[in-house]
Length: 194
Image (cartoon, rainbow, N blue to C red; front, side):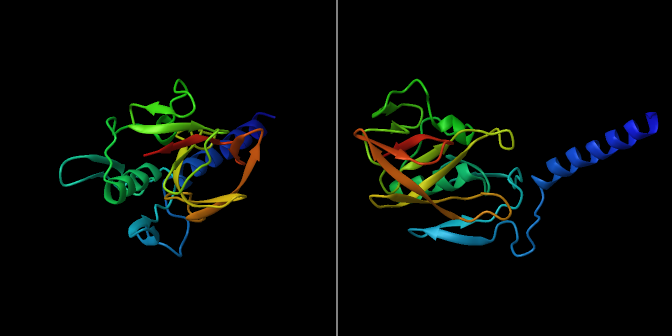
């Protein structure tokens, strides 16, 4: 009985170690970390490998912090800096921290210097809005992407670091009920707009 418990414990330890290692290494032989996989308005989306892989910090020439290289936050901040000429007053924080639960729908999120909308909101999402995702058991930091297309029935997002086999673009249903717009993804807390 003791031997079986030790074997099971050993297997569990190996599984846990394998899980955490897989979040930091590249499991996809089709891409190399730092490889271009997509772009939006000339701003490149890079491949990151494992979701927790870190390749250093990215700073602009004037010292503005864009974030950890090839992470989701780095892409959206680099896009806002290059395409929209926007710097966030608070240039640090995890993806989920971009959404401030104390800010009401349609009001200013002062830490990001952007207007914040809750999911659902009276305001329909727009192209270039940042979609903010909650954390999960597998990813406690959350996620952030850019809305790249909006129709009456769906949105398309573009993202960096969706995981080693994730796609840079995804589509979600957009629902209009009772005068409010809802992106049909339970992890999306809301969106931010310049």
